[in-house]
Length: 77
Image 1 (cartoon, helix red, strand yellow):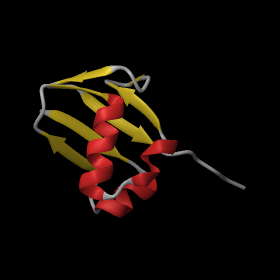
Image 2 (cartoon, rainbow, N blue to C red):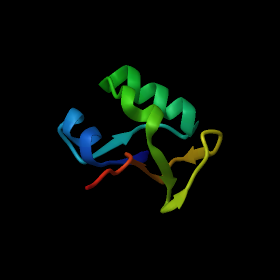
Image 3 (spheres, helix red, strand yellow):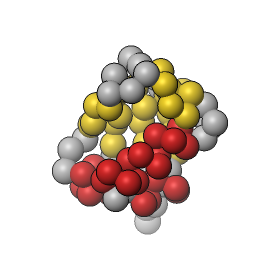
Image 4 (cartoon, rainbow, N blue to C red):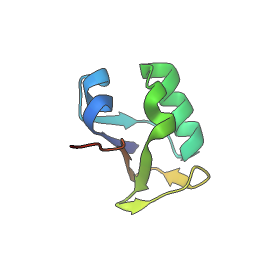
């Protein structure tokens, strides 16, 4: 199982701050595509991704037991 943490507008869109996905291994890009299709999270194209609290690339592989965080860009004023 892959644990997924959502923040800001991603959390608002899904209505939860975390998801669990039954999978053994997926690339970040495949995980994003799956979430875009299942939850309509089109803004995943513009987020930073971390696996187990370390920034990750689109080609990195997520294993069962990992925690993935999707971190949207932050703006302020």
